[in-house]
Picture 1: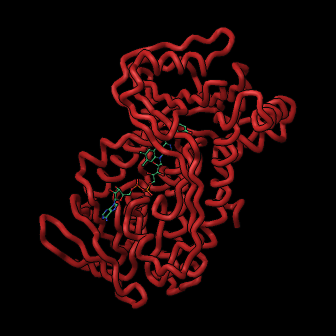
Picture 2 (picture 1 turned 180 degrees about the vertical axis):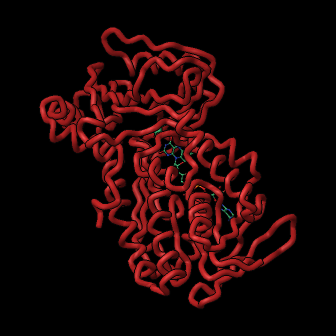
Picture 3 (picture 1 turned 180 degrees about the horizontal axis):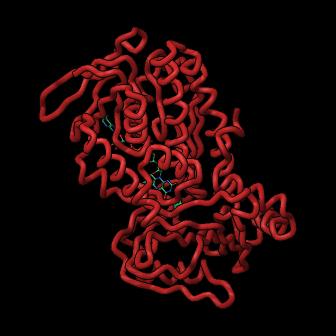
Length: 393
Ligand code: FAD
Ligand code: DHB
């Protein structure tokens, strides 16, 4: 197979890239390890930032999100059962977030790509990336026990944390940074109307909890658990009991309902400081992981793709390699901002040390400050909805 940009991975970053390149008449072929059913059924993030909404709109792929997504103009931050409201629109000049499942975005992008005749090979594993220091890199792949080669001008590794993109970068070309947090999230989906109109992030002496949602009839909630926990130890009753305690506030009642999905996600920060080697470029989870508090993972993956598209368009339309050369630094400025914000939100709302300890007092001091300072509320609001691309120029 031959193309201009060979894309590994049909997650949000890979599929935004494919559709965006098509708009500029740049050819791409996508290779995806898993089946279509698996990719579309994978339950992950749900928070869509303003920039991501703008990108999907520009691509003409936001029709279903506009219809089914739920726009939120604020968020509740709860500490020891006391809530502070952060109104986004007022603090950020009208920017908002939308709640719409990542797998729905991926489905919309995949449908559009296939309808336009785009080439996408499911159940096809990229096994090796070679010759990326030449003008004709190649992706070796396996499908149904047969081997093939995708020859391209550039390889876009959008293949997530466990993909081969990062492993292929020459070891000496980057530094990596890792934090493993001493807690995980147990996430559930339940058939029950959300008990809140906007998301609630809560610190409680039992640990962190988050109330999110998916629709008028489906709620998405998370509780902080130990890293060695198993979902088997968490009956529905135990989950609802912890959620009710941790999300408690005067006059608030948590509605309970049948839980139909439970999974545990470890929390880590991972970074590398180079996203490119020759004609191999990385985007999204392939290059960075943020802890989920703040909902940045998917948004960051799609933001990387914006810089990648700018670089490919400049190359193909004006024969300039300038934006390829600045790709890493252009993307890294936003990624570090999101790493800091995700780390900040994680530390602010998780139980890290004994309730009443020095660490707890610092957490509480920050939330107390939030109550009195519009500047501090604005800092949270502008990071939460995502800073505009122009801010990082
Ligand atoms: P991915 O979505 O991981 O896509 C990469 C794709 O590449 C996958 O489809 C994979 O199958 C494919 N692939 C991998 N290797 C190969 C190969 N060798 N050949 C071909 N294809 C390959 N973020 C939040 O903000 N909130 C959350 O609640 C949240 N929950 C999460 C839960 C889980 C279990 C995980 C793993 C992530 C979660 N995230 C969350 C993070 C967010 O979902 C990711 O940041 C986002 O998916 C990144 O998109 P991506 O396109 O870079 O990578
Ligand atoms: C969701 C996930 C997050 O990590 C977050 O910060 C907010 C919402 C969600 O799945 O809806």
